[in-house]
Length: 177
Image (tube, one colour):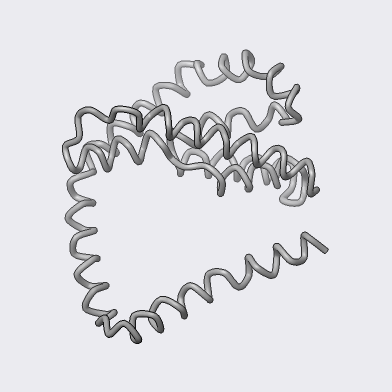
């Protein structure tokens, strides 16, 4: 029952958002197309500014994986994740997600192909993907694009939010599925 309700909400969420925003803008007398084009211009300019930061973060991720540090971290954290009901296969996903969205997507795709989309690992990986953020990517790119040098509490707060998303994904998947 709960799963079918969630599936129904998931299927309708994006079409509802696509319809509601232009209708809301119409009643607020906002020229949707002109505003969209202006936003797309700004997005392109930001995209050009963030390329150096994107290259730096992708290179760092490549070095981290190629050095074997990722595998070592998975071995160290395995007993801890077993205690909270998180399969050890998901550690790579949990570590990769704050670093890179595309890297995490690759890990999730590998997990789903190996264990199946309806397996507990597949469901937990998918829930983690939706419950966490590419924290270091976001901080590097967006703080870099507006030249913020002192991010103060942004990194610990964002990592705490990611940890909360991971724990919630594990807890909710174990409870629902």
